[in-house]
Image (tube, rainbow, N blue to C red):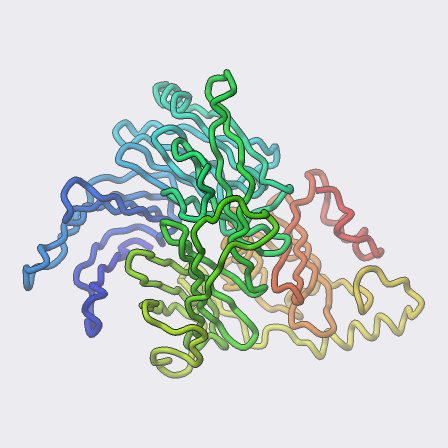
Length: 501
């Protein structure tokens, strides 16, 4: 919305009831940010992007520590339109995950405004989304779902020197070990303390991800192969580091800049928990199948987590401060220093009954409970009675598909429905476009469909939710399929896992 505001709070003043300063005039909801330190210790640049495809650079001038009554000075110094999802930035290059017309990673030169598209190696654009980006002196790295794409700065500079818009392909693309599909992808800006002593110290890329098979956090180090006579010099992965196991209910995590500490949020059935993890220093070359030395710093319950759920977390390692954004619209600020391990009970005031109040772009809140489990149980049982000899597939009880979305999940296909099909595709899968559920299974025990067929433009996705593992799996089906053909196949007993895609 026009006229949005950024507020600046001094976390040292615990009893402040209003921000120290603010900046009006941000168009849209922020979906990316980067702080840059300037030569002066009191001057910073804050770069933000919004869902409305605008990017702003703000100059922040901090008051002297002993200056009483002086507030933070904020001014806008630059703006670019047409880009969103800022992943990284320097004084001269800004890296975005998408544009207003395509879900393509872009690099923008701040002085000229010239841009270059950073294409991936996947032919399907739904599988080529930039999950994380890092701009270094030598290259730009993009972490995608199954690979790390590296673009050398010489090629980038040549492309930015052209007057016309251009695109480039990676100078090197590395598939994750063991064909991992990664989530929670995070670049580490400095050499982590857990790397092996003989690991190179220059021109390396440090990446942390949660591999989706087990949810384990893994560290990957990409280093240049200087023994290869090739320009640009290619990269290769060292043996991976298994950093820590994850709770099956983990929904968000935030690594410190050194990757020595990490905070994670677990939306368990009984509530939401914040867990602090410390990764021990390197002790040589361990068996990659064994976890590193891991210490749980603390674990505590987030207020109202049983009725609310965590949306995002940001952790600042230097201060130990964590900010937790909840679906209710609340933001919890927590100082994690000094808390004991396995701290029980809720911290802070809950402020009464919580109600879901998500950001205004998803203004419609579904009824609670959303799903009529009794009605679904009756329908599933009736289908079994009508055909008791039907061969069961990999599901128990037998699959019963329905297209009556409004009957069981009223409002789920509304474009502004919080928790609806478009919300799930945009916010969870990070795919652009309007989506709708066209077919889903009627579960017997769970308050949600274990399988869904979702249409996204001219493409189709299958979503499988596994309550036992606390996760979902999404598959993009190949082009050319029609809704009618897919529905006929699934209703006839076909398995979604056997569809091409």
